[in-house]
Image: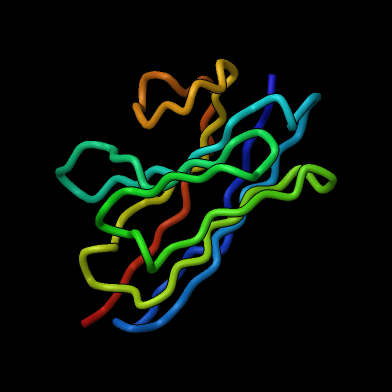
Length: 124
């Protein structure tokens, strides 16, 4: 089992940047694929980015491609999401998640463990 705690959210103006971090506790962080998801008010939770166990493979939602970068440090049990050129439509609660099956999933239901979320608000 793994526990996930996100940090780094906040209020930023459009065009600005934020870096989200997710700290994992528990054993064998490196066996999990990690993902970031987000949920805006009144909307379903949606995929943002994922990274493979080794960190060599990543995938992004079309809406964030070229602006967001996911990375991980297995030695420190952390995964990060660097968000640049932020837009008001990026406003949401951002969640870190872990997937034991490690099959490259981008589906909410395929992830086994979730953090509590961190709020990101982008003002226009």
